[in-house]
Image (cartoon, rainbow, N blue to C red; front, side, top):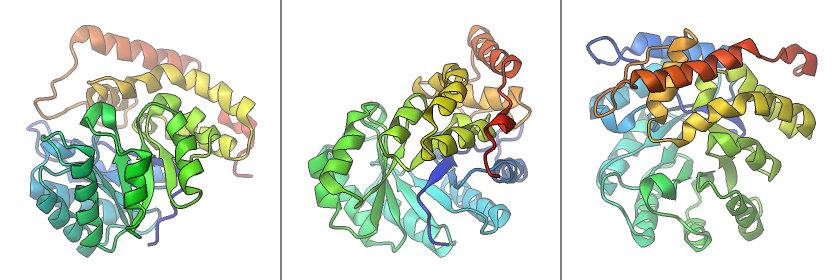
Length: 305
């Protein structure tokens, strides 16, 4: 499947059994539910999917399970988060052989790269796979910012086609369009500035909290795409307190606990991520309960008619 880089792509969680082995069946059920509720694509093996906590063979089994259940209904993208460039190349080649539709590539893990090193990393992955690649630019978390000048270098790689922009500076979105026009597809990569990103021209949103409220996420995107910003704002302001959970160090635990509260998955995460302390759980539960008590009837927006 060719990737239509548009819409809401949840960075999905990886579900675990009580012994912390991967539960591929419940992971598939979760993906099926998300697709049935309207998401435009799926991203496995991302940060929220606990990529760096999975064994190499588990990552590949997660991809296989996703491909099986998605069955061509939407694109399946895999995160590439490896400790060395060679490992990233090998993983990308395996993903291509398995029929994954595209890659979201992170800089080398553990070692904090310079921009020159990060660019080399992306180049080597791009030159060793035919899959379309999204650059995941997240300097806050990964310590390296691929600048506009860096993206000019990467523009020479024809299969680097998209950017997940997560600098938390929405000015970067306008800078990308000013420098490159439509050379790159730009996705918003930070949940609590997603609407601003869409208003500035981003054509997609990679989201963690979409795992909890997919229909609302899709409605925000579709209203923004239609220029119906005032209506989008109503849902956005309702959603924003939960979306802010995406920007804190325990985002994975918070998202998984919210999934658990919604009856959509397990809260289990692999160490070093530990279950949230009770006080933090109560905070997430308060946000979730408030959202449920004030949930907006989306039918009034007459989307999809």
